[in-house]
Image (cartoon, rainbow, N blue to C red; front, side):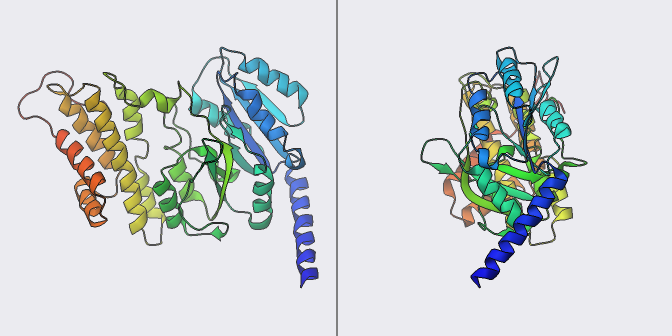
Length: 367
């Protein structure tokens, strides 16, 4: 029996070696760079240090017209590792969505992995990733991450360390975790053909692409291992939209409100399995973002005469993305004994009711 296992392992390795030789690159690691001089070199070195598994890997960098030393660092790394690093530079800043779309165009690997250059890849990640691809060859591989030295944050709730083709379960598990970061998933590059595309001129581009990528996967594999160390730093997109006294960014919150617009319709068309759980967690995702937006709106002092129309417009945008109406979802919260979630949703729904009578000024959010 042991000889048979060894023989099968050797056969699989030989087949993988032929595949690597034919495709040349088995993995493209994609780095969108903009003003990250403090962290960028460490990110790249965290990949290069895994030298036993860097063969057949390319690191594709697009510098989005950085104004610090990021481009110089990238050029230096390119000179040192010309056989691994591909570098492209924008003449003018175009934003992260354009940069990520460009990275997809320049990638040549069978699989792609977006990595933010202010984070870094943990030791052993490439070895585990390559073993999974060699053994299972999934369309999508999911991993976890760390925000501190010891604590690991889950990115998925579902079966672990096995190949699965239950896409409804995949959608449920990702939306339940609420972790939409594109760097938590390694995907077959062909999944990105004909879309999804990162939305140009908008933020929350991860939320606007990840759900559709889930629908395109034929199968997936979840490795409950931390592969990324995530740095939470001041000045990030999430930091810029969080609640601040007397500050509420209408445009950024509108981007959040419409990030998954159209997904519930595509989900209904493409998923054949039981969708009840997936519908609930997609609705729960939209409702939670609406509640957070509502509290930021109110605590920023925006609730003055007429402002309820703006909050009501946010309600309509978020609810349009939900497969379950929010009033019905609140009832579902009660059934599941989620009392605090029920109370918060009902409160923001109440505050989002437009005031009666004529209102001057802005009549809602522009589409």
